[in-house]
Each structure stands twice: as structure tokens, then as C-alpha cells.
Length: 362
Length: 254
Image 1 (cartoon, rainbow over the protein chains, first blue to last red):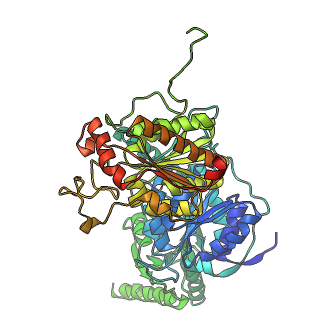
Image 2 (cartoon, rainbow over the protein chains, first blue to last red; image 1 turned 30 degrees about the horizontal axis):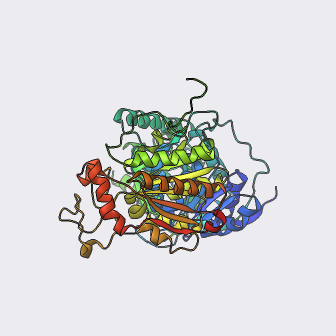
Image 3 (cartoon, chains in turn brown, blue; image 1 turned 135 degrees about the vertical axis):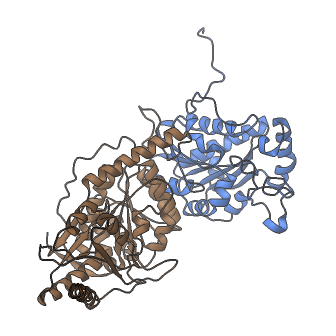
């Protein structure tokens, strides 16, 4: 198939349809509303379900009901809307309902702003709702990757019977890039959806629920969920390395749009003889903890630099991964301010300068 | 059993054979049975899905012999919407109490009704929060004592009890809205007709129906079962008048 120029939000919408997710519930919020606008036209063409709900709270619960049919369903929103969805997300994790939720992040907390940010890392990765649960969280850094990960998200949701969240900063949703959609989607062998609510015909009634009043049954359910999360950690860690060599003095850990800005900065300092590598987590849960550790402990690495469009959230997971073996520094801008490559270059050069100074002193 | 014997009374097929957790004198059991009888009489058990609320009837799925979804507090109409939009061939009913439907779930029920979702909502109004142990509900009557209004509901502080069926009848879209009661046999017969009609309308793809059922809560009202049916008649009926508030197909029906 040929490449087409598409806005991120529209490409995400089309990717879902390509993945067979013809069921979409939404509530308008900047900067992701184009997904809804695109699908309002597109869903009738493919005979799908499009419904604008009265709130994100209701929409996420509509997704719960829709997911219980066993069909592929999804919603998209942005930070404050995602906060409102946390109730149903927790219930869906508890009831083991597969669905895909896209968060095109804007600055927060509160109403915050409408410009790109990565400040919902904690909410996505650490569990924004109540209870012992995790979401599988993927973070694209280009429109093409958003398409690819969107398609993958539906397979992963079905495979693990768990909500999958794809998070992109507002830039991913708003920028236009050439993208290619696969002609044919080949899903892996997925488990049968024998849990779906289809009517008690020729079988006993089935219930989709997250309620277990017996504490031992709830504990069993929680450990069962935990086992799934452990399986995700084993099978679903995804990342990409850029210019990672044994000459690197610094390794940057960054994801999403921020990682692309870091690539530009890495290219620029390379021309001046400074070797920096980039490790870009694609799956934020499961977090590539062991892989980051393996890079960080290499002899040539003097310092690990985490760069985020937040005041520092993923940096806590990087610190956990590095377990004090190397110094972990952080640089971030937030509130909708996107760091320029120059700012990243300055950070890198400052670090190199400080290192050489301390060496001279020694 | 000889060949001339005739079954006059049996458990509906749409009900399971288990002992319920409901308190003695509570009318949830009667209302469950009426819904189950409606499902049986229309022959739709195998394509019906119920949506359970949060409240005393949170475990309704244990008593109905059909598929069920368990919703977060107040969200049953949104859950039912999501399901029904994807499976318009199935029959979907919500079963919700007054705290669930009017207080925390006011937004979801109003919008589901206004969109004309092809659902049947069974709304049980017993003027109190039952499961949490008798707190004030949006339907608690003036002066009624509950654990969160120990001096009786003060209208200056909390406003007047909400008449939900009247409120919904202000919307143009809903097709069928009726308030019934189950405190006496003749009222139960009327309630049965209304609930059956609401399911029938859904079967005919006619739109949104809600049946409000006045119900007793002897435990949290601090009364015997008999006292509670008297209290319902003497106190709830004057404020919550019974009757059909909207039936867009009443003429057709005749």
C-alpha cells in the first residue's frame, strides 16, 4: 500500500478500523477530537457503531458494556477525560474485559492546558484507578508507530483480556506525517472469547463482573490478574535503541515525541565528537527495566539522562532499573512546553563539562 | 402427577433456585419475579442480559437465570447502552435502586432515556439507601428519619424528594414511563403488566422504557413487613402517585 499523509489522530482512528475495531464511543476534548470527527464519518461507511456519550465517565462505561459483547471496542480522550474514565478502567481490568483506550496527553494537573505533555505517565503506568491492576501501556513516537501500535493494542487486549492504553503526547495526535497501513492484518492465535455475554442459549448464564464479596475469592482473582501482568513483563517488553554503541558517554532514556527531539540532539552533538545513545521505551508497562539496567552498567556510560515532557515521572522507574549503579539525571519541560533540540544539546554538553571538570579535580 | 393435573404456580424459568440474601419483607424478591415472569412470557430468556446496579440488588445476577453485567454505581444505563448498541438483537434491562439511579447515576439515566436507548429500566424506589444501612436517598420523604438525617429529612437543607418518573416524562424521547407499587396483590398485578409491557416495547424496538416500582425496606425503615406496606401506602403513595406518565403507543396497544 502507498503512503498517505495523515494527521496522527485520524491515522489512529483508521488504524483501529483496520484492526477490526468498528465500535467507538467518545466525548470531545482537545487535542484528540479529530479522532471522533473522523470516525463520525468513517464508522457508518464500515457499518460500525459510533456514539458520542454525555461524559467521559459514561463513555468509559459504555466501553465496558460494549466490550462485554466480545467485539473489539475503543475510545480516545485526553488527560482530564482519561481521569474521568478511571472508574470504568478499574472495573474493566477487574472484569478482564479487553479494550483499547488512547490518551493524547495534554498538560495538567486539573484543566491544565491543551498543549503536548507527558505528565500522565504515573496515571497510565501505576494504575489511575483503584485496586491491584495494571494496564498494558504503549507509547508511539511517530504517526506511523501510532498506527502500528494501535493495531497491536487490540491483539494484546484480546490476548491478555485486559485494557490496553496507548499514550501519545498532543504532538502525536496533531502532527501530520506520511503513514502506511497494512493491506491485511494478520492477528496471532488469540484465545476464544468464551466469556462474552451472548445470551444463555445452550449454556449456563454468564456474568461479567468485578465483585467478589468473599475475600479469598477476591484475593484469588487479584493474584490471577497479577500472573497476567507477570506474563506481560516476560513477553511484551518493547523498546528501540538509537546510536547505542560502546563509545557512548551518556545514555538518554526518553519516550514518545521527546525521544525524537533527543535523536536530533544526539545527531548534533555526534558531529562535535560527543557520543550519546538513546534508549526509547515503547512499552511503558511492562517497563524495559532489565534492558535499561544492561545498558546503564556498561563501562563506557558515565551518566544516565532521563528526558521527559513532565517534571519527572518515568525517571523513578529508570532509577529503579539502574539501582544506583550509575548516576541518573533528569531534564524536563512541562505544561505544554516542548523542549527544543538545543535545550537537550545544552544539557548534554553541561553534563560532559561537569564530568571532565570533576575528572581534572581528581 | 396424573394427566389432568395442571401447574398453577411455579418458579419462572428466568429465576434461579437459590435462597436470596434479601431481608424478610423486602419487596425486591417480588420485583425480581415480575421481571422474570415477563421474560418467560415473551420467551426471551436466552437473549436477555440484565445489568445489576450497586445497592441491595447488586447480586441480582445470582437470582436471574440469564446473562448479566455488573455495573459501577449508577452507570448501568451507560453499560446497557454500550452493550445494546453492539447487540441490538438482544434484550437488555437495568435493575437499579433510587440511590443508584437518581443520585449517583442521574446523568447516565437521563441521557440514556433521552437518546432513546432501546432498554428497559426497572427502577426500585424504597426511599432509602438499603445496602449501606439506611442513609438518606434523593427519594427520602420529608421528615423521614435515616442514619444521615437522624432528625428527619429537612427540605431546607436537602431539597424535596425527586420524582424521577415525572422528571423523565419532561423529555420528548422516552416511550413508556410508569410508576407502580408492589405493596398489595392488586398493585403487584398492575406492576406485572407494566413490566411486561416495557419488555414488549423493547422487543418491538420501540425505544426507552422505565418502570418505577415503589418498594419497602422494613429493615432500614425500622418496621415489620406489614407496617412497611402500610407506611408505603400512607406516606409514599401521596408523594409518588401511581400511574402511566407516558406511553407513546397507548392507542396502538388497545
